Amino acid sequence: MTEEQPAPKKRTDPTSQLARGELVHADVKPLDLSGIPTVVVGIATWAVAFVILLIFRPTLERDGLEWWLWVAAAGFALGWIGLWYCHRRWTKIKAGHPVRD
Image (cartoon, rainbow, N blue to C red; front, side, top):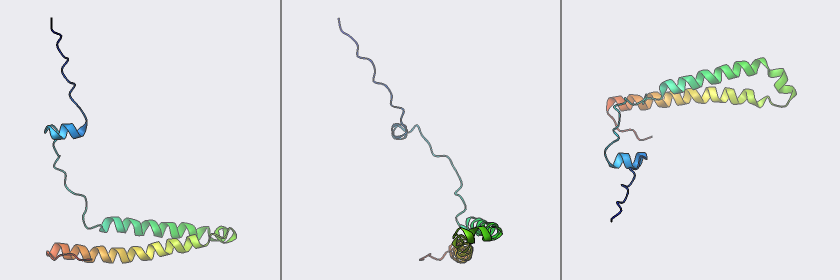
């Protein structure tokens, strides 16, 4: 009388499924490669933060937190530098030039 061995369980982890060819990659378009919309949202966010902090400036001064206002101003200004950088980089990419930044 021979006892049959139970069949080994099929592994269901993604790595095993990928190795067996059961997983396929979906055809998904890449996200925005220029970065420009992201930087514009950041600039707008820093501008809104600056205005809100400007409204509460007396409270910030009283609590010794007026530097928050200048952090928002710096974020806004640096955002414009980032926008210039992304625009310049995206223009080079569209023109087919190698980007070495």
